[in-house]
Length: 288
Image (cartoon, rainbow, N blue to C red; front, side, top):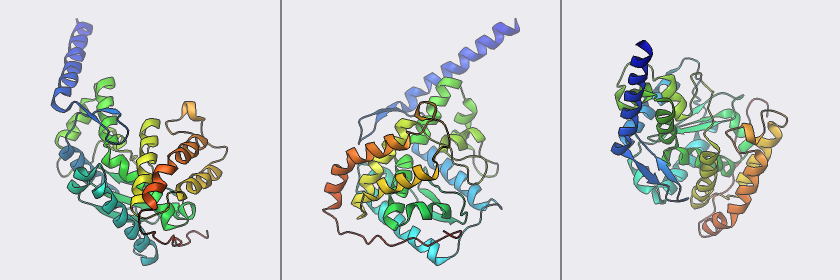
């Protein structure tokens, strides 16, 4: 009897999840034409993004940089990428976002993120790999596309279907002030429970963010060819670490670099029509 009851409950939960597809449904990515299942509203995603950002920036383990040498380049690049986003095929979404950017003083973490709603953070550990503001534009363009393309919401929707993760749906539907954002929801946004831990998106999401990200960087006036050097340096840094592409949710470094090169003519055509932005060097950190 207990087994039958659990089976009935599971079917009912799955029916609720599948039924909610009618409330959101599928959308098509305007750049790649890829169909996306999205079961949350943009407003819900923005609320989650703001809540996650607040958690991270208020975490006592987060050291927010106040050094103008670190903060000002990030803000310059962010401002140009945001303006490019507002001219892009994501323009309506970009105009809804309430943009903000924070620099987190962590010289050992080579990463950055952008959350739904436009809340961004850059870890100082990415500076030696990005090297220049153009390299940082490739990083930030990539991260901004994750948010604009609603990759976190798509991952959450897939999780709801495959795992009947109604806790995630509940968090998305209205965890208002106060409590901590659920780990499942944080994971869907690409942010780990610990500061500095950023979880990978799927290979298709990463490739999509690479592609549109260099178009945004180019439109912002940054040389998109810097993205290739960025990932070559990232490959050197992580040489011999981690699983191969088949076992990883990230494309391999070689695949990523090859893809960037294949998209470069389109990005360069955009870049050559824009006033070029000087590739100013980023500040040295941690002895590098």
